[in-house]
Length: 262
Ligand SMILES: Cc1cc2nc3c(=O)[nH]c(=O)nc-3n(C[C@H](O)[C@H](O)[C@H](O)COP(=O)(O)OP(=O)(O)OC[C@H]3O[C@@H](n4cnc5c(N)ncnc54)[C@H](O)[C@@H]3O)c2cc1C
Ligand code: FES
Image (cartoon, rainbow, N blue to C red):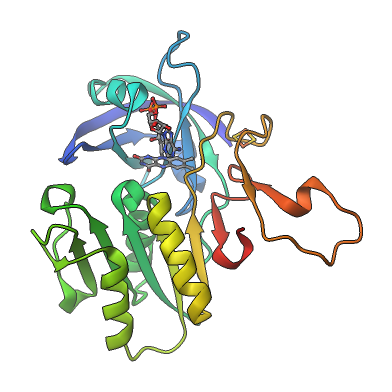
């Protein structure tokens, strides 16, 4: 983990309320893995006070990419940063995805959850690993990938304006029903309702699944305890302890196995 002053290379609109940013970040790019994130200093002043966490969405040589959705003052301010601006990043943070060699990865992203899924998708392509990618949004204006089921990419939209009509969970059901691959592992990131639906689905089917949580957080490296995630209670521990019931999204996560979470 380093604090790095990074030169902004580009910052442009990608889809509805969604922007992509590329930064020269040699130190972070050298060690970052898919699923990890950076904590961004938005302002040197008091407002907004805290850094804002963003998953790394890509890495090319000494550059990293971020994909961010505008939701409040911090992300709104980011849209105004011009190329050449120096951005203070803390990272890479968190654990990242772990992909076993003997499994077929199925990647499921929703809304702003595209970023860590996108990085994993690019990394799997660069290693020549077959996998499936599903991305779900409300409508066509939220997507920037092409619907391409022949190449294992399915887009879903809730209004039916592109790809398959329905939620990403509808898309997942269809893909799994048509799939003849062996052991799969799911990798999911998206809004809380999507993560919750995905978690219920994989637990019911007994499928292995890693979920990237986007818990509200502050420090990003285990000091403030502000990002606790409740675990399923493990009654086998003889001594009850806070750590048996909670993990920290910033250091133990943000990626967790679905079966671990309460
Ligand atoms: C590990 C991690 C990785 C993330 N990666 C990405 C990413 O790649 N792209 C992206 O667009 N966003 C990502 N987020 C969410 C992002 O950090 C927040 O959207 C951002 O901090 C909001 O800042 P703001 O100042 O614009 O909004 P604020 O003014 O702080 O908040 C505006 C609204 O957004 C809600 N909000 C704020 N933070 C979060 C959050 N973490 N999760 C859910 N709702 C939130 C607030 O409750 C409020 O309703 C990630 C969050 C975490 C914890
Ligand atoms: S964000 Fe501070 S402990 Fe996790």
